[in-house]
Image (cartoon, rainbow over all chains, first blue to last red):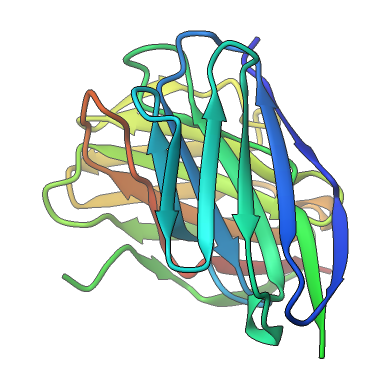
Length: 113
Length: 115
């Protein structure tokens, strides 16, 4: 069935360094790949997304890349700050026209001051 | 818009009791999702609706769980009888279908503790 694998499960970086989180998906029909950030005790919130007709998208310090051939996509955070510390989830749209998102297992990012 | 609204925010109940969680999706959205989040299992999709019709309930753990969506602005997730292993955060989420991709918006969650 549809599956999204996310790595690493935990990531610790020094403030100012970059962080990269990677995901792979199984359904070649997936065409939409959002990333959510969940702070402790809060709801997951969309931070950036990418669609299959685009290879890269950037928004200030965050960027996402997509490789449809290899079926993987990544989140890049540059110049990390302590407030970036959170759990990050990648997701992929399920089989065409189902409307559901399949989430990865999450990455706990810790940015040390 | 007020976003997805869930109630109760927190509930502590005794094993064997019935629990009802409620959700009001964002107005105009045609998809509604119920997710469960635990440390061990992450974010699990329990069930989702499209235009008030259940589409996929394969994530519902067992017969003790049921969900309804009587109209476009209200859904419930019921657990009867509840067990300690049901303790989790239950998120309701909604979205508006687009062929380019569904952006899902989450409610603040219902934190359930079964003792």
